[in-house]
Length: 468
Image: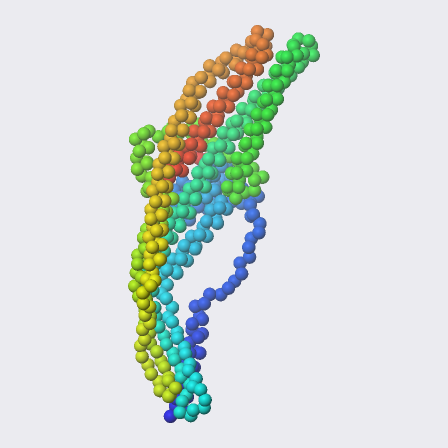
């Protein structure tokens, strides 16, 4: 009988050792992942990724087609390159992997619990043997809360996706903003260059006349001061353009030293001038704001995920219990087999703290959503009001500039004929170029406000035609 019991004990130990390799089959292996310590900015535009066919969230005009760098980069090309190559977006894409991993984790069943025990009798009593215990249990409460966990993880994954989409939308808005700013700054560079040429020519004429004693020192000094002012204006315009181009290059994942072959739309720069929306259209777009902006949709998904977590914590307040079976051998050598139940009594904790925290978090998310929606509506109304003011100022200036152009032509002839003083001419010339620069700045303001309004409303821009 004793020999039979020893054989049974050796058989139980053998089965345990044979089961261990099966438990280790599903274990993941470790592989080191070196950290990239370089910026990784590209040195040429043709090195940028251009295939956006896998970005299903993009409209066809940005997702399809080929970017031809040799033909220049219009607004649609800049948008596509920014979405595909922006380093910040590339980093945010990894958070989607985290959300997917959490979703997988929420759906996994809990592992069974293996219980092992041994009782060694003291002394050398021949009637006793070492007692063994082998138990296998399963936490049933994990099954009760599994549905709520999966629901919360699914909605949280959607919230994370929409948050990344909102950041992508921000990058698109910034790319459009910098593209339009760069186009207008190119116009400003041309204007300051023209101003410098004219003021330099005026000074050269006055300086030559002064050497011939046909002009006065104050006239030559006024011409020199106007020339110096124009040189400073051109340098300032070059500095601003350089800053914009560097920012745009970094947004595309390029080295700031890489030149960007920007081209205007086929219909011309004026095609980017869009008037403010009518009041009726604005009210309609504001009413659709909660269904168009990705960040508001992300907050909605996050709130629904928190609703599921509240439900999960409420389910977790009930007593958790583990159900299983034991295979035991007592010190008398008798083997037994029977079920067991392990029950946690919710007398003092009862998961009350987690329930209160989940509900408080839900209240916070609810308030945050309302605050974001209110702020978005207020921002839209402010942008529209600013855009209307800039649009009206631009329209007024456009009507007045032709008369100023004609007056400037007459003043040049009057200066050549000696019928107007240099002080009067340089003053009017400075105001003339100032008004033309103001026109370009107002055009830039209207264009950028259009982009800002599109971004805040979460709407697609009106197509202006491309170069493809």
